[in-house]
Length: 194
Image: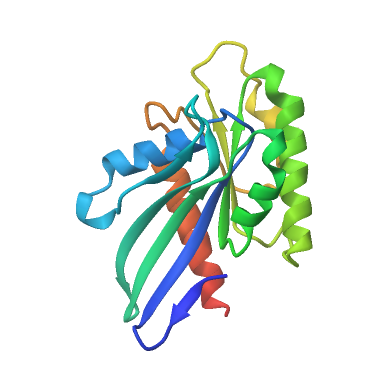
């Protein structure tokens, strides 16, 4: 849930990048860190393994300026995708205001993507969130690789709620900012109803 500090007139929202290992979650944050105005982005914090895979999470703070008299900040997190870090994913997802589900578009990753998607839905329900009403954006990543599934197949298996979706190539930035912008906008819409 968003942290609203009335005394400071400050709102802090949390967006979590969720998906399988090596789907491109951390690459999204690195690209955003590179292209956002340095005065609007903090230092990126990563806790990696020796092979540069996310161990606990990545964090990238964004300053969005003032909206309706409130200072608006977003904290972008990634979860580790490896199966053995399920409890860590649960912890990082707690309190999220929005999610970008980063799906690896390669055909041989469909089963893993489905398992990760189902885990996300289960965890949202355990947090008393209704997945169809919660701000989730689908990012079909790695569209530049051979043997990627057609978008209608990804939609069929991974997007039952018909959430907004973007084709992406995180390493070049294609679809990265667009997915983030849509998630921020959808998150802000949910804040209006609080």
